[in-house]
Length: 133
Image: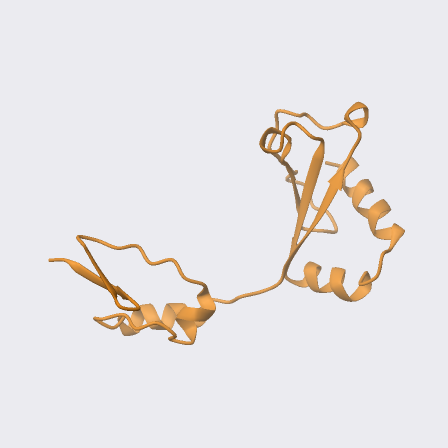
């Protein structure tokens, strides 16, 4: 059996296909999949959620790097007031000292509403959290 994929006027044939589309596209049924997805799979897609995710990118001078440069993910297993993680992207950006913090869900919402404008307190708060890892 083969899979036919039609994009505009072009028809592609393959033994298998992997479809990667945004969740919103699947939920809105903006693409036609034949045979139709099973009811169970549609129910699972219907239960999946989308949410907010924000990130803060922080740059440091090379002589002020305080984290282990060979470590990609910085985090801990202890309880903290926040649920974000830091990612060290130095190996992927020419060894420039940068950390990226990701915020999702309620914390992302709080970040947007409480700190919508530039706020030095946010910087101090997150630096303190980072120092505790």
